[in-house]
Length: 360
Image 1 (tube, rainbow, N blue to C red):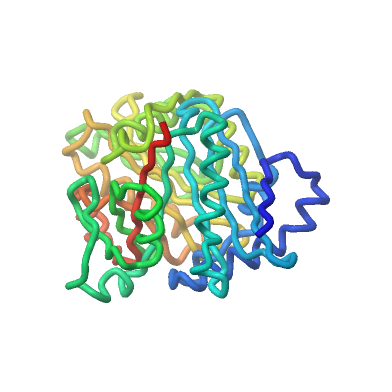
Image 2 (spheres, helix red, strand yellow):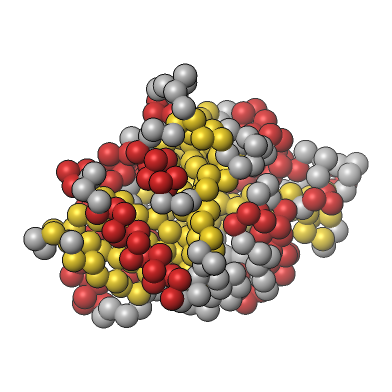
């Protein structure tokens, strides 16, 4: 197998155009074989960004494996640039017709060797399983998550592949889906959707769609930074990230470039940021919403803000978008958020295993 490495930004726009359709076809084939459904098919703008876009905070490296000129394997690395610079989040897949021939192991070995040479010694990866796969053999051997919550069947190919190559299963996440419905409750530009005078606790929820308003950049930056420390299992996968208004602007610009529209709900007490939630949808697939960050800061928990944020954001989605269903991910030990999601009508769609390997 011939393996080609592509660092984001090193190919000309013409060269990216020349391979984009082929890479999309491969990614679509892998997704259809996973059983996750068409909603998870790759988006052209996202794949193009992985091949061509780099900023001060994140870059990507792609590996393409070919036999006889045909793509039979692909690897991808997400690489932080401003913090956690020894971390790499890896993913790789092999064409279904070419599996069990050692191609995945060879590709992953190349990826790991290049990450080690670049000083990226803390690796993470993931696997996604529909519930029918995870629950097919409940009496069979399972691997328990290091978090102490949940397990995965050890004989499942994705699980066996990662476990057999030195990765440790650290956390199980539940991917859930809910339909967005009901009457819209708000419209217009960003503003207060709840009057703090109506709440004895003094919290107010603001919502908007699109880029972060200038006067809320600092609050959103604070909450993004807390996402790297205040979520269950965060310490397992990296150190605290550094966020400021400039980094939020860069994130918003990237989203606009790939035609990603984000609906945001922000909880405030006075001018202090208490929590937020984001749902993204794409112009290329407007009926599907993807839950982004959701966080209630530790010092503001116990006021029902998680539910209030999601309810407000779903109302804004109903008013300003064509989103019909939203997918979200939560660690299984995050029982309070799972309870909120259950009450909001979310149902299990898939299970996601998060894995770690230390090369040092």
